[in-house]
Amino acid sequence: MPLDIIAFDADDTLWVNEPHYTAALEKLCTLLAPFADADHVRQALTEADIHNLQFYGYGIKAYTLTMLETASRIANAQLTGEIVDAILAEGKRMFAEPIVVYDHVIETLQQLSRRKPLMLITRGELFEQENRIQRSGLTKYFNYIEIVKTKSVEVYRQVLDKYAIEPPRFVMIGNSLKSDILPVVALGGRAVYIPIDNPWQHDIVKNPDWTSFDRLDHIGLLPDLLEAYLDEA
Ligand SMILES: [Mg+2]
Image 1 (cartoon, helix red, strand yellow):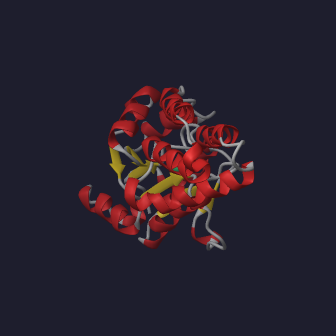
Image 2 (tube, rainbow, N blue to C red):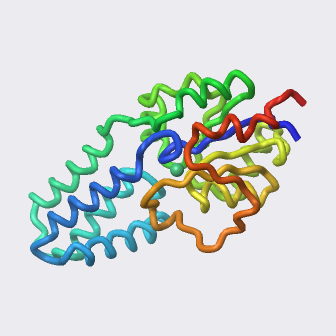
């Protein structure tokens, strides 16, 4: 069945994202070294990060608050203004990081956008994600951009309904099994998983049904994979 729309995740699919979070975590470990060893800080932050999703959602602002919370728990009364300032500066550094688009992304988007409408579906906070999309220079390849609070089956269903797309005519490409791949497969859509090294803990899924979606080593292989589905209906 031909495709109506090709949809892409953004963070860690089109550009580098997760390493900025890992770098911030390492910085926090250094700041809190007088009070706890690095493994303890990493574990405390990762747990608080996932717990806080229900309050703060996703993104840098949420992560900054969670770093402050973790610092407060670990340093207690010894938490200084200097440490708080350093954590806030780390959050701002993350905002200012240049957007590094992965290899093969531009050629792939150029090629596919000539054949089918492309959609960007990214999760996170509106201000932050709009800013990042705009700075990526990739906006021109996308017919549609959807910034969603979370990526559940229900949210994908709403997006498909909004554009009147039948699931088998929709494909989602992304780095997260939990957010980009499995919910789309559950709806009857197609999905292409392009993993990154050292994924976010929250994105890890054990024992998925590997036969229900495609997997590629890099995005440059996508046009060949989809070729048979790109012709007009
Ligand atoms: Mg992603």
